[in-house]
Length: 289
Ligand code: C2E
Ligand code: MG
Ligand code: MG
Ligand code: MG
Image (cartoon, rainbow, N blue to C red; front, top):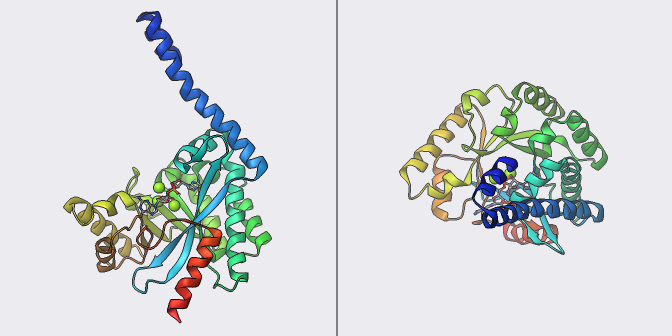
């Protein structure tokens, strides 16, 4: 690609060539910089996790949290997971990062428990690279053992495309994870190429409906129809439903009426650093008693 593009640009004259080359190298340079800063962040242990609550649609109680990567680099500033994860995947750094996320998240849930909160179910996002790594089940088993974390309190979130990259392999891995007792969810459901009839052969417990659908659910009949159809199918397959990206009471009312089970979104809370999440839990507990 790069060679062909440069060749064409060259034909257009010297100035164009320079312009084009500069543009291309800045993308490459940004990635190289991200990679080296990311390696440093791993070595210096400066990656962070934030935790976004999951909420019971009926009772309003917190049912668990999802761990989300946060990175504030001294040189680059805040780097979003959407920029960080692809670099981590291309460089293989997602394997050590993913293991760190898993261990840190399980440890954190135990730490909140020691502070006096109920043990909180913990959800962690998985990359396709992790799923396709031969050691993955061993890593999960070791982290659970080492942190004394009950497997059914751990939820792993995978996208449809991660599963469909190598469906036969994914099926074996997901079965092993289910045998461990881990809960499995499809993340961003509705944005991938697969569908529920393909997915039903996988031992999945929950569907997370992508927030792009929830965004239009009150104003857009098509989004509303899609969400209704997905929820109905999920119910018939005995899958639990989590609605992502709930920002308004209207959206919550919509998903409640469809008998969705849980939601996440700014209406309840954004993802919070561990300390703030603990304070958030305390406030909620005080209101409940
Ligand atoms: P995701 O797993 O689907 O996470 C939900 C994303 O939506 C998060 O963005 C969250 O902050 C955001 N969000 C939650 N509620 C709302 C809302 O009400 N409105 C809006 N507009 N956004 C909301 P974030 O943290 O930037 O993460 C983006 C994606 O990066 C995640 O999507 C996940 O796919 C990936 N990611 C994050 N952490 C990890 C990780 O540790 N490992 C892997 N493999 N991927 C991760
Ligand atoms: Mg997720
Ligand atoms: Mg999602
Ligand atoms: Mg997402």
